[in-house]
Length: 176
Image 1 (cartoon, helix red, strand yellow):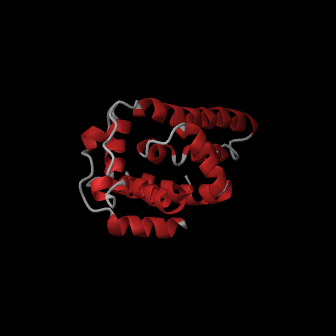
Image 2 (cartoon, rainbow, N blue to C red):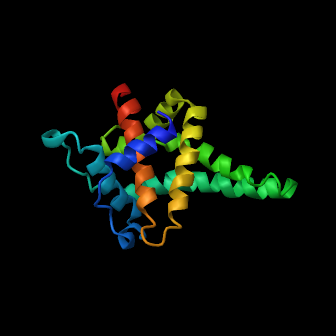
């Protein structure tokens, strides 16, 4: 699916009931987000819904995913800026090129998949690196732009997260 379709479908079906902003900005950001994602991931399952596994260290997985991506961003920014400030923005592309390798990590964890880091890597490559990159960057821009909305800064964030869940449900879940 293309990013426009994913965002449109997400907007139509997201509903309400987002975690409070004060909850989202805390050390429990990944657990809070995963609880919400778990609900969205399983909305259509009904009675067969798995329980949310609160024993998983979601912070650890978030730190792995974003720690690696931020390291690549900072290191490449430093290297590119030594060459020329004009190419320094390529660090953003490298951040997302790294981040997409773990694109489906949290839905995989929530579905109870063994070795979710490895499976996320495999599923990203099955999806296609270029496809993943050209889908994720516009969704990310949409999410970041939403943070400028002072009345509801996280709405776009949740729409973007739900778009990734929809993508996972439609194109990845059945391949597992």
